[in-house]
Image 1 (tube, rainbow, N blue to C red):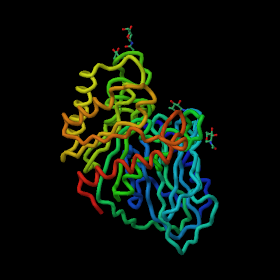
Image 2: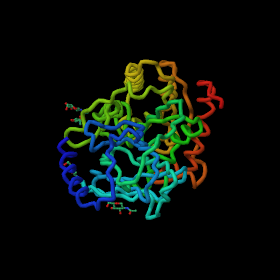
Image 3: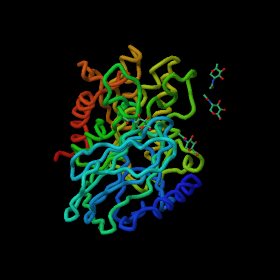
Image 4: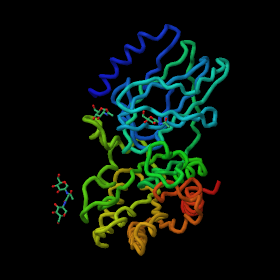
Length: 371
Ligand SMILES: *[C@@H]1O[C@H](CO)[C@@H](O)[C@H](O)[C@H]1NC(C)=O
Ligand SMILES: *[C@@H]1O[C@H](CO)[C@@H](O)[C@H](O)[C@H]1NC(C)=O
Ligand SMILES: *[C@@H]1O[C@H](CO)[C@@H](O)[C@H](O)[C@H]1NC(C)=O
Ligand SMILES: *[C@@H]1O[C@H](CO)[C@@H](O)[C@H](O)[C@H]1NC(C)=O
């Protein structure tokens, strides 16, 4: 709370200095629609960190639209995609260092105030990169926010690690992780949601496993995916780290998960019994969060064989799927062309497309979602 308040004072200064033909729309405005986990405890500053969190609105009567953001990312930017009337615009790089800034959402174009514009702001990076702090929109004082139709009635949730978080998806290898090559919006999870016309909520974090994480020295580790999963903002300064998500806000019809490969990405290997029982326990805890049990799809791949040849991970995940009445989906042998690789061996957009193509027939069949 203290963190946001500190910036509220700054905002006040910004507002006072704005010439009086501009208007601040605060984050709690009823015509701003949100999707994803967001800490809304401060009306003047909403805080979020999971990939794919969206802010959606329709505006008319304004020649410009700016958003006020800050990020607590360390050293590098935190990226937000902008879709205006269904067209992707130049993304914004919310610069790091806890500084609030106004970001022009329409890249210096002048909007026609007689037209309506529907604008969607989508968080590209995973929580590891940092929290985003949203302080509202600055528009002409003649602007009017309008009702936005949100026709999507199917709801899906996508859980995973770096693959799902779209690590390196835009990179030209050789390259390592950087926020600007990560873009959840072009990942398989978002592609699957688009194809099904579904609302999607995603929790994904690079390097995390079920029992241990990538490169953990021991068989078990703290701060695994199941440890972070229930939180609104899982790594956060002070007050934001400990708010549990209210699972009643979003009831998915189904969950697609792609987890477990980090457990077997390096030695020591997790014993089969421990891995399977921990995974089953995690799935049972997810089911207990929701009032209506979602259908669970468990994917394995595509990075398994590269990291640890002969890894038993996918066999164990099939066993967990069988034990929890879930549907197993094999995503091995996806990266067959050089163009299927982004940074550090991760799937590129073409590989994500193949993953989505592989996943969709299972979902259509088991959910009976044919159109
Ligand atoms: C994005 O912002 C960060 C932080 O200021 C900066 O280090 C980085 O170079 C920027 N990236 C681009 C592509 O402008
Ligand atoms: C931003 O602020 C938080 C909390 O005050 C602090 O932990 C973090 O190091 C800061 N980040 C930067 C890049 O200054
Ligand atoms: C990892 O295992 C070693 C050897 O058993 C032990 O000394 C060390 O404390 C463990 N590290 C952690 C973080 O648990
Ligand atoms: C996990 O955290 C607990 C409590 O902080 C600590 O006692 C334990 O050694 C940690 N285990 C590992 C594997 O790091």
